[in-house]
Image 1: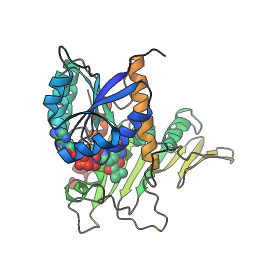
Image 2: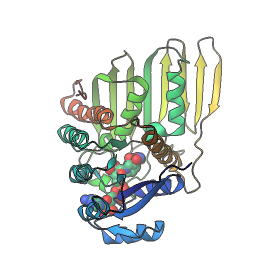
Image 3: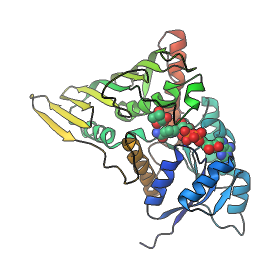
Image 4: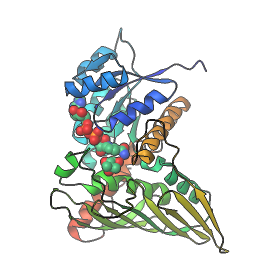
Length: 352
Ligand code: NAD
Ligand code: 89V
């Protein structure tokens, strides 16, 4: 009680930002005071949808108006544009001294990622990456049960994301990009692998394009060897036809030296003990009122990520997926493409 309202601006009023805006409006103690999109139609749509007066078609003009002397005050910016725009927007926000949340993939290369992290540090602002899959309730519970030691030391993992959902409808750019499933979706699944098993020593990867109407790969199968000895398989597909399509669920199998975990389709988490018993938990999302099938696990995770960001800010701690941490997830994406091109296992880069 009595805490100052944290004021933010949203840049990028596109498809996914609608979820981010709904989540901000649901959270207490935070207010989005301005919107920016270079497309005036998108801007007008969001202005009407969310009732925000202050709108800008240019980010530089927005920062000039909202920061500096005599300003109306701005604490943070939520950058929800696609990756290409981050290279200019992150340094711009950093120079204006506001904390930054940036959508994944936060940079188009590791060199750029490094540059953005350093620029944020030099300007004394935090850089948090909006990576939400590890915040899906079912995934989070799996992470927590593993971290609590319920199955002992893990030695094998599989994180599987296989669907035929038409992702191109809401995100047409996904059909055009040359790097598709690893960079857009695999990035989330690789981040789950890091949340579960830590850093990766080496990895191999094979890819395929099944859908002839797109430019990138829509299937990827990776094998990761983690520092702690776990071998994990990460398999992703948007070319899998299933009558009961699990979109957008990640299914998880983990074997440990004292039991096993199985996150089954439709949100059942099985905890198998070494003595043969099985504890079954219902880990379905408790989605916000504004969420819509089949997106509800993701929409709930947007709220969970943003709530944690707000809490972290109040307590002066970084979120789990801060820039340096997410550099290592991005490095797995880069390593996967290298491994797929060479048909060899490779050593991913790591933040240092
Ligand atoms: P989109 O194309 O629908 O929206 C992007 C918006 O940004 C557009 O309205 C565009 O006009 C605006 N924009 C681009 N450059 C700008 C600039 N320099 N200044 C102001 N506005 C600018 O894209 P989307 O599908 O909403 O995806 C956005 C990002 O969200 C991507 O990086 C994508 O990977 C990510 N995404 C994340 C999740 C998730 O968190 N699970 C899901 C979907 C998309
Ligand atoms: O979550 C995402 O990043 C989305 C989707 C689930 C479609 O892959 O792009």
